[in-house]
Amino acid sequence: MVKIAVAGGSGQVAREVVDALLASKKHDITILTRGQAPAAAPVPGVKWQTVDYQDVEALTQALKGIHTVLSFVQLLSDPDQRAQKNLIDAAISAGVKRFAPSEYGSRGLENMAWWQGKQEVREYLRKANEPEPVIEYTLFQPGLFLDYLAFPHKTSKYVDPLQTVFDFQNRRALVVDGREDTYMTFTRVADAAAVVARAVDYEGKWPTNGGICGNRVSISQLLEIGSRVRGRPFTVESLAAEDLEAGELKAPWSLEAVHQAVSDDQAQALLKMVCIGTLLSSSKGAWESSDEMSRLFPDYKFTTIEEFLSRVWEGKP
Image 1: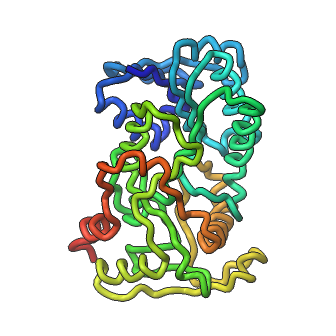
Image 2 (image 1 turned 90 degrees about the horizontal axis):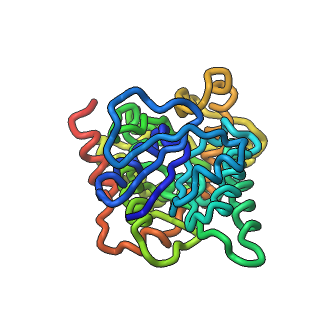
Image 3 (image 1 turned 60 degrees about the vertical axis):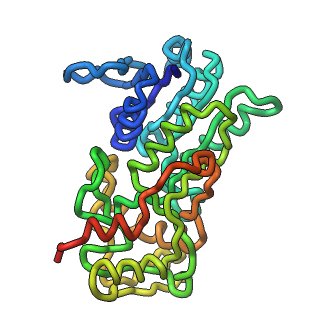
């Protein structure tokens, strides 16, 4: 049995992972929260603990006896990443064996300013383990959640639909001209959560690059699959990389919905940035995850992209 602390445990991806951990019936889980524990009936195997992420000493006490810390702290709500840095310091002081920072997305971070906090935390962990390792850690990176290609339909228990540049509902897509052969990784939320749960049970050393590769497809292959499951070719807008690099989005449509973690006053400013950033980063290979973590579990069967999309879009106009 492993004692696990989950920071930011009320978030959508965190709840998917907690459910996967609970399904194994092997672990004691402590959910760290800034607020009060929910009033709902307690779940066996789960307890809530209110913490102050600015108080390293109190965090250290909260983490005593914990084996693994999984962080889902929202990056946008912690601009200087002080909460995660303090959490890392406290985990080291408390003798925690393993730490997984708030990742759960792309391998690369090019052109994604909203995620630069991830790089800060990656560097913080790397430096914390110099010159000698003091805490084992991994970066869980499943690429883009396959569930987002079902937008606006919800296909997971907790994670809300999220619009992307691949609009299956309206059979259209935005791509960077000449970069259609770039590969991306798409992993279903449930599969990513299941692999994280298996990683917690894994007795060997975690790889630092915790790539989870459910499906690896090129953008052109994705559009071919889209044409098959949606019954006709997509309308594809090819955008010049130089325009995007200059901050110009010369497209007849763009993103209209953002992640639930983004506040209303941030939303409009982020929409264009996210659209341009996603296009440029994907064209540079940022969304092609490795498979170091998923390779540790060769018996695990991932949901295939065509199987998933065919099921989601069958019978829909």
